[in-house]
Length: 277
Image 1 (cartoon, rainbow, N blue to C red):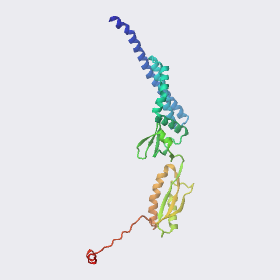
Image 2: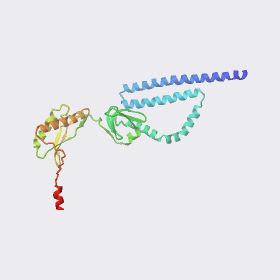
Image 3: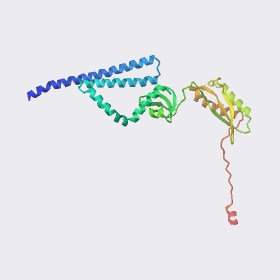
Image 4: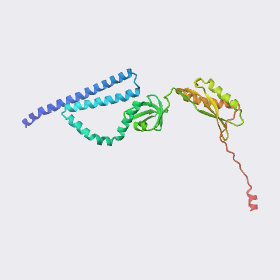
């Protein structure tokens, strides 16, 4: 019994040393991987690379380095890494079929980063969701809605759908319609709308604001008002013109039509109806 115990001591000590070395390699390697990833991130920041691309590439670099560290730790433990890679390669097809959606999201993420239809901070509409781009991850895109909800959209859905980027250009056109009555003086209406647009500080002089009659409706004459603004001022100008337009048009004596329904009541005497019968 004593002989058996003594014979196992070197084996136990050997495995303890291997496990300790593997842990040291993993811990130190993980630390080094983080430092290298941080260095790569800083170099890309100095090169003024887009932040979306920086985060995406940094995640990929860290994942590759971490896999290398794990393989090195397994090699110290005596695991045949070459054979393991061969087995993983053979199982890759089955794994790829099982994770085809995830791989599709990864491929779509690469395409989004390469072609850059949007960047961090842009307000976009993608896959039926509107929000500000927070981050493009390996498998998903993160949007923050105007009411501060965070939405994760699989990259595959973003890449396959139509993407509308409201922040791509510096300037946007505000499209508004004001309806007035047929009895109103159209010159007065045009003058009021022009005055509102001219005095608003956020409306641009170039391109010029367009004001014109766009439709003769069933109960109103519709004026289209189309000023140009900087993209970040869009909603401020939109709401200001709606409010000021109603106030100024009513002050000028103009009538703003709205749907109305006339209800006619016919009162009949039940006794006279009975006598008739």
